[in-house]
Image 1 (cartoon, rainbow, N blue to C red):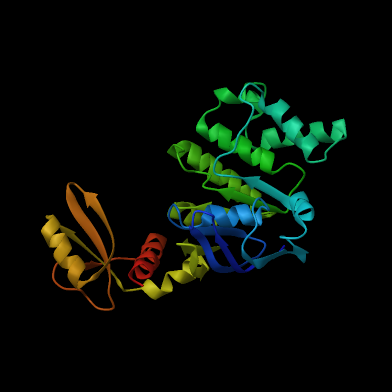
Image 2: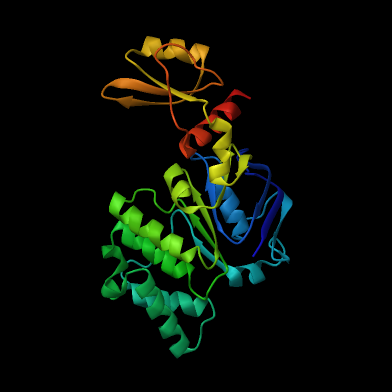
Length: 293
């Protein structure tokens, strides 16, 4: 399975330029699309999912023209959007049966076998007859994956799937995605760096509709080896002074003080300690570079 996106651009009627000549190649793996809110991730996912047309560019999926052969693409696609609606009074099993019919699974025996297997796979079997309105956030997301897996798709797109989940539900959902990703191509669109770090063998960073980086997560760390430094500062004035002198890529509060991380080829000065880099450093470094351009 190969998905190739070439020079994709999209500007909405309100003037927002959501995609700017985006090009990506996604193979048969778990691919992470990482970027802040408003980066263009959802616009890209909706375009790949045949829900909107770009202004220019091309997308192919194993030789299928995604923009012209939408019905063919939809037969191969499973999609979990950032927000998806269900009939709240229906049970999970009834809703999946209904959606399976819409996906062309007409034979009752085949449909029952498929739905039962998906409810087991997503750990919803015991609550299959409960109304979807009674489900927790994590249960609804697992139901979303179940509906995306109907009819054995070869490409699955999930958009911000762990946003708002508590830690236990997030772990359950990530484990489910990891199991699915062994057999099909999965595109995980998220602003949560840890989701990509834990799951994806390849990734891209996108901001303001542009691809800033594409590669293997572990290999993207090589540029940062020996170049990440940390220091704790007590006041806002001290923080601003360091920001004026050094390339600060991230800050966070720790016990009421600012803990800052700086990208520098050499030691920035007294009080700085070297740190091992992580994928969050890669993410913030590229975002900060893009913001300065």
